[in-house]
Length: 263
Image (cartoon, rainbow, N blue to C red):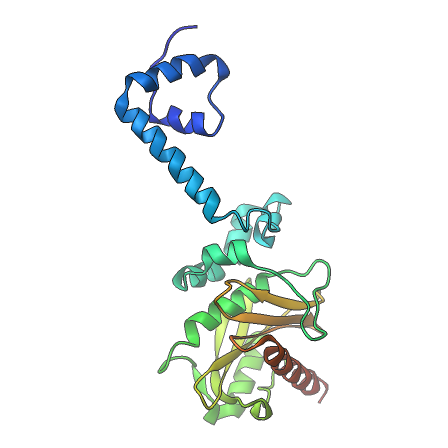
């Protein structure tokens, strides 16, 4: 074959096993004759090994729903647009990589995962919580002191009859709420705080078709979401409480939302 000039691109091809076999001998000779390129090859090999070691514990985890949707043919542009708010929020909260690699579903005090449950709701709810729960002066748009207006405003915007659950029995007072984008629609976020200043949030949007429930955590050190999709509601309670306590709060909130729907 005709000998060709090799470049740094060929180093990557060789490391990825994509260099044509009939060029391997000439490539090895080129590497040995170029100390600078040989040093780069060694560095890239070490970087690759370090990355594999860093993510060894999550390489076998299920593929995130976002990428499954793209593979199924939903279209990268459509999926990216639907998830744009989450990607932006997750980047701001530095949870993008962890969210993609570390999410999981598990049963919690009778709330278990149903087949086909989508993690989009939980991802958006956690991203919103991470950003706004940390805010002191601008965490909400409408304060709890104007609760009636808050409920009416969010109900009209989201398209659901929405009540702000009373979680005083669980130790949490309503701080207020705000309107957020969610997929192709809108979501309401209600923020609560206990006597120690610890906050939880309730994220609610409309979903007329799906029915599932479960828990989701984007980061082992971050907040967890207990979510459910039923009766037209898509809801998630997010916080850093112990699992049993978060599940109890979620059940309390869910019951009051359904009661408000029936009233």
